[in-house]
Length: 372
Image (cartoon, rainbow, N blue to C red; front, side, top):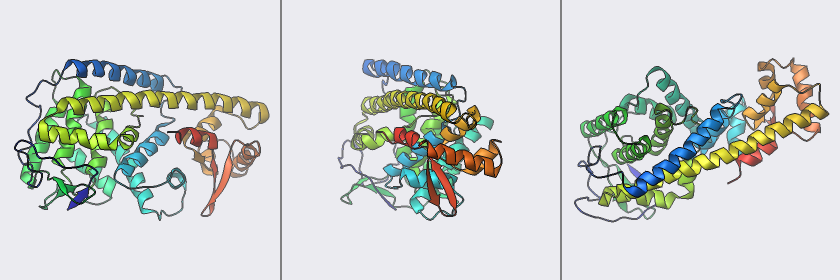
């Protein structure tokens, strides 16, 4: 099976891009990873992550934005694999009863479901295992896929040129995954963010599945942050950074494979953590400010409609519908229908017909989410 990626080929040392990389070194690398530059970057990335974590856990309802952020992450992670959907399609499909027809949207929603599955599994068993990876990829792909057994899997650039051939043979792949599992869950002196970079490279290099490796690997990043208590609420949008720096991402992966340039890849991953944490905090602050202004406006103009519970419903996802207000015990079908009509009249919501349902868009929230 061929997977297309966007980077060029170089052959260095004993690595041969056209042969299965069965000699992929086990973790941890026999190399000094904690260089001065890496340690300095680790400090700034950890600080940014801690600030985001603190802001999230201090919210009145820390889980309020999780669905929205996880859908954003699912959309971006899928986009890296050229699975493209729009925000409107995605958010509408997430709440409508209409049967999904867009294949890309289905895959993005399956990714979000797989992320939630992983988080649930960590609650009962706080370990990242091979079996968990298999569960995640099966959820992403909505099939019974397991460890890759078919030979001939290669990764190619956009010109069709083979640039990497991952390990081949189920027994070899399982041994590599067993080593990865031991490394992830072992206590050692490495900083967790440095370990995060190593586990991400190794999983992508093993390439254990026929499809869905990239998306599974990016879910593992979020699960690891949760596992290490670096982010109590895994509300970070990592894939956005990879999309914006895609060529560099593949270049740094390639650098490890071909010349053991761990420092370059670790620095890239640390920069991703720092950048996305800072941006996530900025986005969060904008949304909180919008919530406060919206609450004030609705309270002044529609005092009989306003309630804190209503505000939460309107900001959980960009789109809402009458059933969500009923589920929040805000009134009867007729009452909540009138609430939504009044909110549209004052310009807070915009209504759209999707199938047989009427959905209401919090357009100001969507505007913040769509800002690059």
